[in-house]
Amino acid sequence: MNTKKCLIITDVQKDFCPGGSLAVERGDIIVPVINKILSTKKFDKIIATQDWHPQNHRSFASNNAGHKAFDIVKSSSGINVLWPDHCVQGTYGAQFHDALDQNPLNIILRKGSNPELDSYSTFLENDKTTPTGLTGYLREHGITTVYLCGIASDVCVFYSALDAIHFGFKTFVIEDAVAGVDLPLGNIERNNIILKNNGVIFINSRNI
Ligand code: VGL
Ligand code: ZN
Image (cartoon, rainbow, N blue to C red):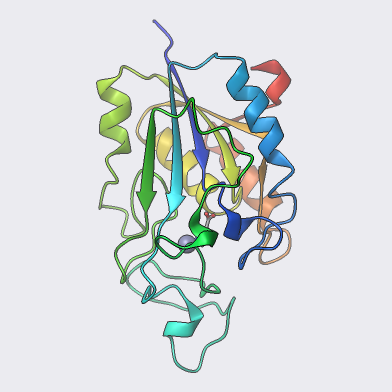
């Protein structure tokens, strides 16, 4: 079968990098790695996603009276962690990291715009039914294989990789081009094991 590859760059945004409101350790370190991957021109399509929340988003602790950031909650709308305000539409923190090479991007997909619903996966929102449109885009372009990188390895990259497998794509996570929240501690390692058990392949960027 003819292999067609798409690189999916997840949420490489200022708020997820050191200095941002939901900063992830190493969030900035992966940017030159991603740029180097881009320079190899090994992909048929390249997509980048942006977490893109309205200020009144239900996943923000500030919009839930009596709660603080990183509280774990239960809700029917797929909101399970309350986060600090982050990636608010049109703000500085929602911008891509300045060093990310945006020239090769074919599309930019924004997610998390419904104030009542979070959207970790770049394929389906957290209700597990609302599509972002990514599956259709990939299928229309005959993509068979996806390579995931970006932030956060144990949140958006994790749920995207599971959905990529679910929708039938051969799925790689580029291990030196992801950074995670690791909340609670050990979450990155636990989720990596789940991904491997579901058929996700971990690869170093030099072996792509
Ligand atoms: C993310 C937490 C909240 C992510 C987005 O991009 O992994 N994490 N919103
Ligand atoms: Zn978010």
